[in-house]
Image (cartoon, rainbow, N blue to C red; front, top):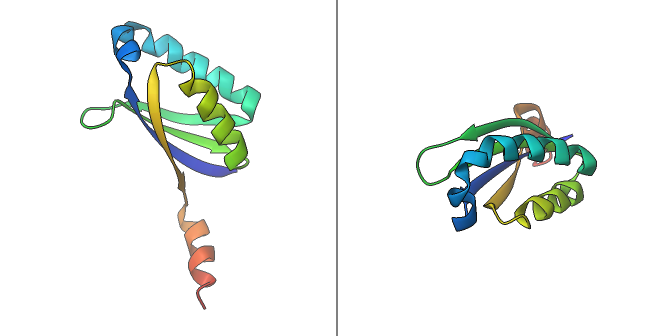
Length: 97
């Protein structure tokens, strides 16, 4: 499984209904299962971003479809990054020769 880190900001709609964000987070975790995506961590944060989530998925197609489904609800805007652990980076750097 590949790891993805998503940084999120509430939209105007999302901040107006922020009291529902815990319930929405539970719904997002459940919805991820339909796309083959597992939300392993979620943090509400201070600073430039309102939320940081860590997901695991088979590939970019699954995590992209999931992100589009969540984004279409209108509560958050997201940026998703593929993350590599130490073992993966050893393999990647090993290809440099």
